[in-house]
Image 1 (cartoon, helix red, strand yellow):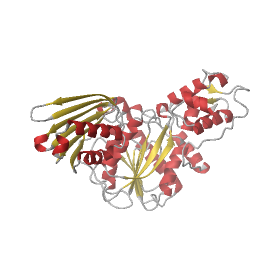
Image 2 (image 1 turned 45 degrees about the vertical axis):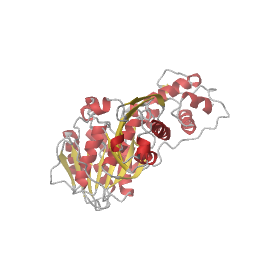
Image 3 (image 1 turned 90 degrees about the horizontal axis):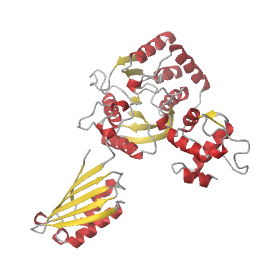
Image 4 (image 1 turned 135 degrees about the vertical axis):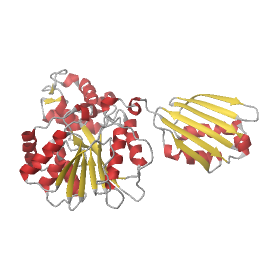
Length: 430
């Protein structure tokens, strides 16, 4: 049965399918939203799953999901699936935070891309900071705190150095201040701050750890990572705890976020999939991953423009434009026997395409006076264009793809080996 189900649900592993069936079996009447929150799987994925098991359900179109009494095969061995590899449990702390949230009644604001995390997630965020040694005697900054992690940390321990909450939302700031006053929590301060504005020098390079759950756009992640590094500054044992969620049907968006992280030369010490759970945000499975990023001597803020169009509803050009990988290579000192030979060049770039999983649909070769050639490859992913200058032993290569390139960091090495040169200049075009 699981094999047949996987054919209809190609994005899911057999173990995940068994885990979903187990949850429904053990929780008859579970709602679609509860199942999304439990698994961290996107709404569209679970919708397709429900269609694939419709014959086994009492009400295939209803929100409550229950199997028919004789719906599942009796010999089907179902086991729970561990949807995230790290989970925390602290009933007392969760109860305290639940009471606080009910009393102060904060509401998420769509204009700030807010989706409130579950109580368990707020506790988990505080606990993972503690386990990583990022609480005791540390200066902690939270860029955005609609989950009240600052309060959760203060309920856990009073041994932190300081906690500073930076937030654009006046209601969040006033609530944190009022809660601290009511509970006698000290050494927590709030700062009204819009990440699209520069940070005051009073706060730069003052913190040991930053935690942030920014808008899930490339420009949003880029801007909040920049601000976080400005707060951290240089030094050892400094960390950024960054949250990001995305449907796994669009892995290229996650790859772009990984590129942002690499732009700043952070060390990815850990990435915990589906660590955070939310009320709402069902298109990304009501879940996001936690990236634990360490500052190294090589970590720096690159000199590049950063967009301030950061929210998901603003339709930033970068986020609405189709996925593109665009590389330009300037190659020098290519042996004459290679650069002047149509046969050798055709073999070189045929091998290049094979090594990097680029599927060639059509090829055109144009010869110019002076022995120069232009090779144009139409790819199923887009196109590759090569122009030669034999008199300079040089080539200019442009590669554009609409899908991620296999082993793209190795492309200069591949070209160098195939073209018999180590003189290659590479530019990645945003």
